[in-house]
Image (spheres, rainbow, N blue to C red):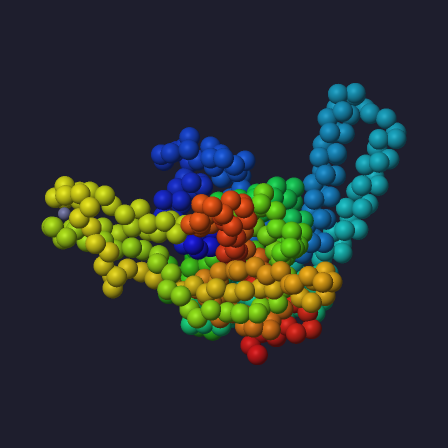
Length: 403
Ligand SMILES: [Zn+2]
């Protein structure tokens, strides 16, 4: 199990989108991720542009309109150049556009535009715990849930995916890729964020004076930077647990309901440590989506099936099973409420408790289970669940952060 691949991926991924130019693997970098329409560098640069420049949906829409006007003007200039001195009606259009430009640009100067997600990254760098503020949500009475647990909450960054959708045509495409292929896009976003966090850290190191109070809060070396993970939420479409589409398996989806049960914390194997019983050679294997590729033959002594799992040298994370049920108003009359199982990992463990009304954003999974072969109904062959990426409190019962 586990969130979409992010915990199971090593540093290998970093080579996939680097701006390194010619140093090795150039061909692979330009390739699409197998089985998807994701062009890695395009997706990474779209997300980077979003993180660096998103101020508000209004500002993004203005920028898109401005770019369209710019393109129209260039085309007109080309036509005019080709025609000679052009004609009257076209220059009239051009004047209107320029007036609009001026109006919009004057309006923009009234306040300082702070890119929202860069500001959040700055807060994370300075160890300020405000990266989970509810931000311009269209749900009026929602509130972020308290992110309990011992892990620093600032190591995750909530991304309102509606912001991304409206940022640019490129980000609109990225949004659809995120929904269809979260296992590929979420780790890619994590890598982009880490790179942005690192450059921001380097910039602040240079910019802040020695006696600036913020300077003291800044990590003193690059190795102390927190790991940041993206938590996308607020998808454009809500799914209903009564009608989960098998076509959505492995896709990102959001659904709402009430938490009815939470399990105790379950240890979640992340790195398996094996030792050869014959010669003692150790092998560590990163668990990939719940599967452990146990070594079959020792590379040192050549003996087959000689490996034993050494429990106290394995790396475990936290995992929790949460059952979310339809709220009474959603249950058709005469029916029993539908429910789904969702798995929360690491700092999302204990983030919700029974009675909470939540919107869960996560990856829809199906796992084959061993069944009596006489039972042939397709329903009983797979169990479905969600690997949680984000919890959001909704409705009147939502807890305010910190309560
Ligand atoms: Zn051996």
